[in-house]
Amino acid sequence: MGLEIIQINKDKAYDEWLQFRSRGLGASEVGTLMGVNSWKSPAELYYQKIGLIPQKVEPNIPMFMGTILEKTVAEIFEYWDGDDASMLRNYEAQTKVRTLYEPVGYVVNPDYPHLFFSPDRLQIKSKNLRIRDGRINLENVEAIIEIKTISGWSSKQWEGGIPPSYYLQLQTYLMGLGIDLGYMVALEDGRNLKVHKFERDQEMIDMIARMTLEFWTRVEAGRLALELGEDYEQYAPPPDGTEAYAEFLNEKYKNPEENTIVSTPEIDEFILQYKVKNTEINLLEDEKREAANFIKEYMGNNTIIQSEEGKVTWRPNAKGVRIFRVG
Image (tube, rainbow, N blue to C red):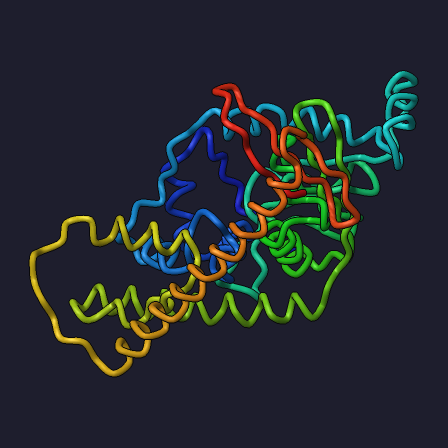
């Protein structure tokens, strides 16, 4: 029987695509609601989903290039067999080692009605995937394929493996489609292919299922409160320590009024906590500066120290100002 697939082309029916995304959570949004997205906070996602913040995203060059290059990266990966050398040999011989299929649309799983799933590609056993009557037969699927285009600078985030936000996205795909294996394929600086194999992490999947349902329950309660003219903010996720949340608050309260309000015991605790942490940070900054000054005095006019603790550089930049770095 397979799972239902709702085929919506984002480029041809953008408004319909936006309306569909409001009905639930996509796998790419899971990292946000779990607090590991540097660019968006759980609270901002909540206000988007209840309809108070527009979901429309303005196109930009990185997004455009990522979309354009996705097809090329997918085609190249069909020849990849463990390393670059094998990929080049297979490409020259036109010998594909896998078959990829692009599911244009969203897979819906009745076990997770608050989620929808749209992996970039599916690795299939044969060309016959069998999509019939709006349903996709996943018995023929071997792996999930997710494609990213990244810069050399961004690739530093990948040194410890797949970044947390992407890892959650991938595990969400495995959960929703009932697959055990996947590949994250990243094109770095338009020339280096980085392939990360990942397997089903049931403990993580259980947490994703629990936390996405909890978040969507907040959204449904918030939507109802908004419709009834009641307090919808009570259902928003609590404040967190991310920069994304700080930016969200700056935007949310960008037109302040000159008023004075009375604190509460709970806020008094946070004020005290802020003051203590600020003092600790200042002391640490002083200690850090002192350590740097001892190192600089030792270096003098030299520019590099090679130490068992790491490489230290103190070089002039284009303006002639020496920049101190410890690697």
